[in-house]
Image (tube, rainbow, N blue to C red):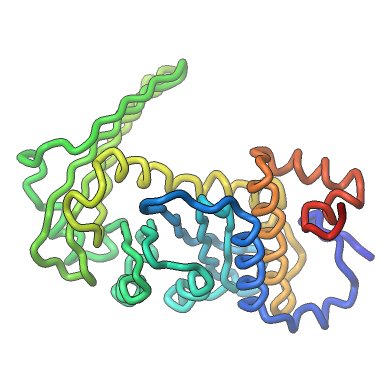
Length: 296
């Protein structure tokens, strides 16, 4: 038995493990975590989707991460340079009838929008200059004349942050079922350095006007950072995924799935510090079995 840099013990018989079906493992993990999760309440729920690089892999490709707050389930697809093929599999095992998928600009693609609408999901998708036609049309809207939909101000001892949201309805936009365009303007003032940062973010959504409040839209958009905080940070800092020596066949994909399982269980059990939860679980061999429901 050996231990890789991720901290997960595994057998030296890597060749057999590398033949595992990563998608099947992902579906099994998703079903397991969904079954043990507290049922979501009524109303729309958001699922944040984002891309993450798995640099420990020889392919140096991109994983799609999806986090459903109701299940605390992170899902990942095998590394690939074609992110279009990476978008669907993590979501195939999720009931998309009703959820709102919040995607970064990397996943703002017509095929993805069509897929989500066919599955019954709404979306909120970020638009950047990489989609010049769409970006230019949204950016050039008369935003100064559009009324404010939501305003939020957060002050700490280190910085002041102000966020303003505006929403404009569209009769037609060159993206599947797009109904509204959104502009988020963020002001950040760092009290230590005195630096002021102003950022404008543009998004589109299939949600019809008045389907949700401006406050709900702002909360979902702001909550998209959880991908970075809950998933990327843990993989980078706790599991040290970039330093992993696992790069044979499907092994990087399998290990990503097992890390997802550990993160999902600990999040569902109320742990906010995954590193501390892993240390606690490792002190007694019965604890991981109990978490998996295999021991009393």
